Image: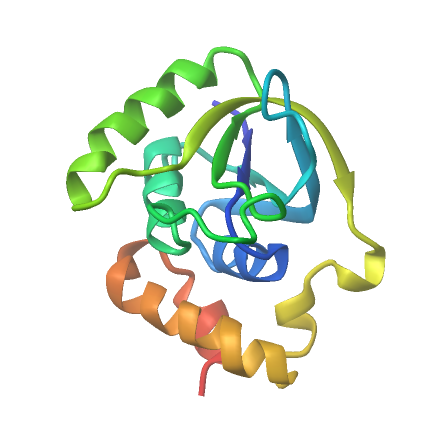
Length: 170
């Protein structure tokens, strides 16, 4: 079985990129702007994750995504940070929808995260890629991203590349 790709959006792409770069089985993460086919077709900050499904499943990635952004809350920035999971391959759409339905039981409030068919991706500038791991000492990294990664270590520790993450956490 080869690598697969999945699109995700829901919070700033710097945060989402760092979270998924920290996981075992994730081979690459590219951040930028993602759009879907259909009614919600505008661009939202997001990432494309390339992963090895033998090491981490699509459902595990979705579970981590739901627990690392406000997946049950509409807020004033939802136009910029749409809560979504994007099927790159058409057959992924059913698997994504099924995973969202099953994972709903882990939340007391209704998930607003939607399954979308991927349309287009525009990568952010090269200097923005790998934002967290290029310089973990930046104030945004220390104040926003590092606390999310610490939480992830405690909630989903089995999926964390601890060698990579421990190097950046203090």
